[in-house]
Image (cartoon, rainbow, N blue to C red; front, side, top):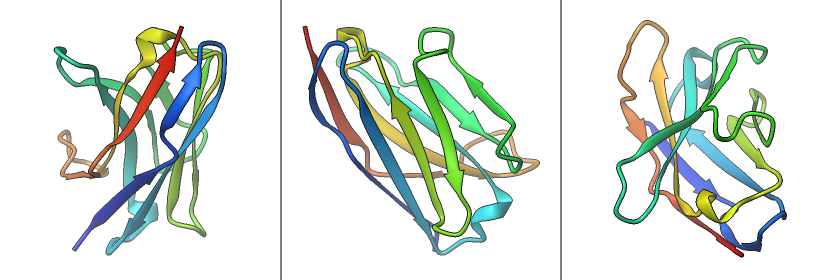
Length: 119
């Protein structure tokens, strides 16, 4: 059974940085496209970033492009989200998700980790 466990959330001042981690187990990690989503209070969940089977294949929502970096460590079965220059509008619960290459929907989700940016 595939499990995704996020960590690294917390409270940070605007302009600060955080690094989120998502540890995967129960799957062949290298076969999964991984992504981060977030959901702010009263808003729908939105895509933040994804990384393909090749670590050079990344995508970002415009609002975080240039500030956030997604990466993956195959040896550690872990995907990261480095968040710099954080803004109050980045406050949300951040979720890690994974899908097999060839599928369009993300089948596996973590429990989420709270990120709060104070202004």
